[in-house]
Length: 403
Image (cartoon, rainbow, N blue to C red; front, side, top):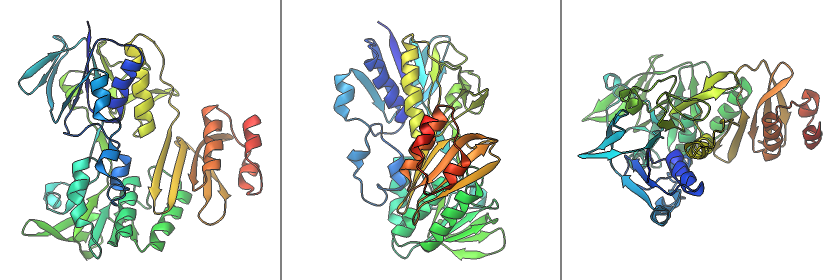
């Protein structure tokens, strides 16, 4: 009987092993994760969990009984130190485990500040894993002073949670505007105004020069414009990198992550990859998507292909972000847009529609699930939307789906 080993017990890993059993695989399955917890969802960590609105058990993707009932061996709190593709083995501690097929769902890692500028001081945090948030929680107290480094979605979400807990927030973004890498100026303007309304101090075009410590703990920061700030905690949100160390050690091809074909197979025919760590063909190019929907969809497809389905992965990118009382929903990829059409609703409801020429390629919808739904369905179907209809707040969007 064959043995499938999955390294990485996050969203993709949990989805993949579940997909194998759903697909009828009756062999042995081992899921290995470096964290001691059952596979859990990460998006609530920096939001509901940090706010104290979600208990630890509610983070778990599936109860422990699921893995036992489906005869899935869990090896949690353990790290794989080596992969031998020739012998088809992985090393975990003193154990050498043989596999017939191997899947890498190793996810991604947050970028840290270098120690040379104070990144190793107590009170400096990243937001990625459960233990990161557990370490940060005692610092997020009313009246504390927080410096958020990075104006992407991670930094903005952290700023929102800190502000909601009564922390005085200063956010710095080295680029000309927040969200510059991932969104149009219209979306940046929207969220800058939102955070300012909630008392956050948003500073663009300025970065962190270095942190100041006393007795090993951060107490201040000096910005690149010379400004000095007193701070009690620092949250670093400057992006993530795919976890490819094991793949590299195994001699697999890398290309902005672990390089896979359209089926999810790596350069080794017995090794597969899915989730944040994997790059794959998409619309004539190669991309890597950092999102929960991609981790689930790609892992489930890889599970099918490990069982012989031979299906191409066709991504339908979508993302979300929760900040204060605003839910941002994003459909599509805005790479290559040349104009943005605004659809204004009431209050904080608005959507921004991205076009490349006449083709709709993405939508950012703030508190507007209808606009998001219509935009996503159009993009997934390869259709476009008349900009005049989109821009008219009185126009019904649904007929666009029948065009």
